Figure 1: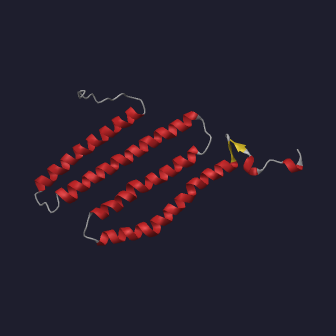
Figure 2: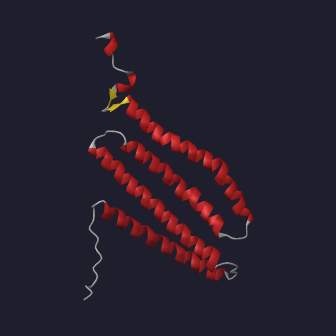
Figure 3: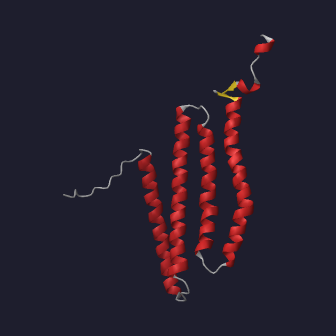
Length: 173
């Protein structure tokens, strides 16, 4: 081996990717993740403190939606981008894509349920004192949650090709 033509450490290939490509993928995840962490630490915590002081309840809901839905989805998206930067076998990419579809669907379902719960509890039942009505609405919300989860599961399974779900609508002439 010639002294002047040695392979660089960053050019070494491990499992089909160079060390440099692994480091770039790691940077693609850790760089924005650090920015998000700092943003959450300083900006979002101040917005949350401000939202709790206001009488308007929608801003509290928006902050909660960001913390529980949007924030984890951004991290998942960063992982997805970093993973897709690597050269991996097609079946592993397909597996990560399917996991991403499931993850996004679960978070969308959770966001829809959070929004419906907010509408029912904060808007429709605001100041309601009749316990029978509150219990009946809460029972109805359980049914609505089940329906939303079933629709989400059917859409995921249809999107992945496991079932064929079509809505047959009469042709409009």
